[in-house]
Image 1 (cartoon, protein in one colour):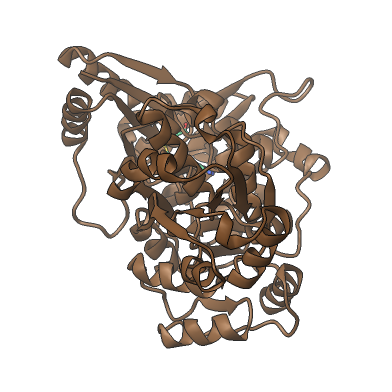
Image 2 (cartoon, rainbow, N blue to C red):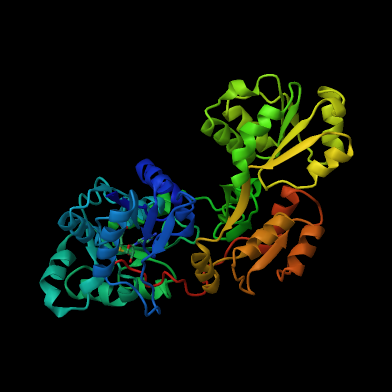
Length: 515
Ligand code: SAH
């Protein structure tokens, strides 16, 4: 039997999950998550974890009852060692996490509860609204609007209306007018300052401040989860709003990828304020051929060269070496060659010195470098260790240049399309602005993931040849930068999109709740 972890995902921004939460996601065998948990948080999960969406969304008829979720959680914990139940905010705040924990107790399943920053704290702090402030408010009450139109709860709401501290109302988006009118009717002054924080801490965050009696009109249509905040503290936002928008603030961009590493493009876009997801995930899986490594090494004469073409090649090679009872000493007397920055970094992490770091995969460049540093190719056989991520013409090219080459593919690349549905929903709701295609192989991986790209999403290819591949695969690029490189691409995207204006199409989270 395993352990079930009830983990709070924090208010929305993936950086606001706890260290413990992130650690458990990395170790998870299975992750069960709610509608409030975004793809960006799920990206933190172990790539081989099974991800199950048990969230409810407006307009979806098929969802799991709480009882079925409880049962699923218990069943999974009996079959897997690390089961993460991931909930928006804090698992025990308006999230029925307590009920799930009780179900685990009754079933005798060991569990742990990992707190999260609840939206009522996190989204408010992010928006520059203190919960308490000397001279303005000495208390804060968290309440759900769930029963806001039930006359039986009048007494309770009369009490809430009489408090002059801060009132934070969860799940009030769809009942905003009912909630504000009721508070006024039961005694709170109509001119009390109030605010709504929608999609707090997320790129599409929107904050509206108004008098209590004008709030519902001023907010209009909501597209994401929202909190209503009532009290003097909301005025402080005028001075405490700290978020400085960048040129891509409020924009959502997907960067397609063909390798497992995080891309420089994604980093550059995030710095400009965009919310970035990288998709699909690329996993490297060991091949049966990897078992042949110790043998091949034994047959490689001293003075030979071991050429690694990728980080996964280095890891797969070392894994197979270790599995046969060997360690780094087995590599004494060979020249270690790494091609590509990440390969060289992987060698360093394995505590191996790369004798010949190379940047080019072109066979003529590799052959020339080997001749220069190792000696005549005829006298120095090559063991080429590949991971399916680099080009495959290298072996033949080196042979044509006179080298004796043994090739072993220790890992191969697998496109992992998990999370696809969540991205498709985001697209259907009009909340994905662009897809960046950084290479032809990324376009191919995207197609292999099965993602269906909505026509409204703008595709940007890094250059003409990538654009041609994308077009052939049915992804015509709307934007192709004039210059080359990451900077030109980012500039083109900024020019093409610009900062977001409010008022997007309905989001799938519009009436998401975890009750
Ligand atoms: N357990 C969660 C709350 C779940 S109830 C927590 O601790 O935060 C769902 C409600 O939480 C939504 O209706 C909304 O009122 C609020 N909420 C969750 N995430 C939010 C966000 N990013 N911005 C504003 N409100 C949010």
